[in-house]
Image 1 (cartoon, helix red, strand yellow):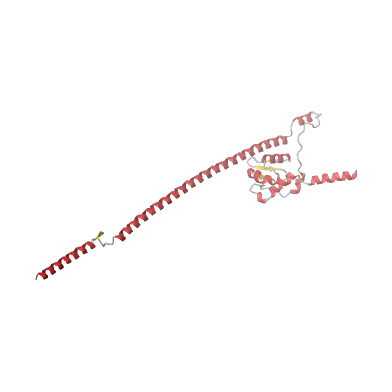
Image 2 (cartoon, one colour; image 1 turned 45 degrees about the horizontal axis):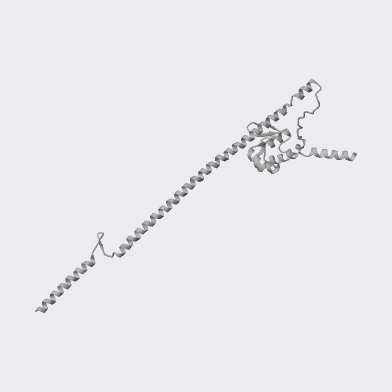
Length: 248
């Protein structure tokens, strides 16, 4: 019997000295300097800030918590007594969750759910306390509701931003395709004109090579016909001289 009690005492001691897995994993994410652009400690090290909720849910949560639900993560924080301490950003605080004080995590305990099966009140003061939930519970509920709605709004805004960027990229791609098509048409037109000019030039050269007559002020001279006339005149003169000599 004493051995059983001793074992139970060791188990209880071990449980109290070991931080809950959720807190330990969250501490590891906040403490990791590689993720400071997404989640990090505040300037005082008394709270942590999720700077980019969409990236935090998409890239970091699945690595340790096997889900990507930011609202579920916020609900878990609320059950361990964390409070959202800023309205302009996702900053969460717990007096025993501090930078460099990992050994204190084991003192953070999960809150017990409010149950209607609690002991019935016997005095007016107890009756008032039983019928009025604790102030912290109301604050947690408001924080949870705000966190859920804000998380949904953040994801919707991120989705709209990505759609807008996709539209801009699609428009730029269409414009580049049109410019590329115009450039190809211009190159093809230039090649056709160049080939036509080369053919005309070749024909002119061929024509010039065939016509070897000399030019005077850009006009071809009929040299060969002039030489023929001179030869005919010489022949006529020679014939006349021979005829006159024979007659003598």
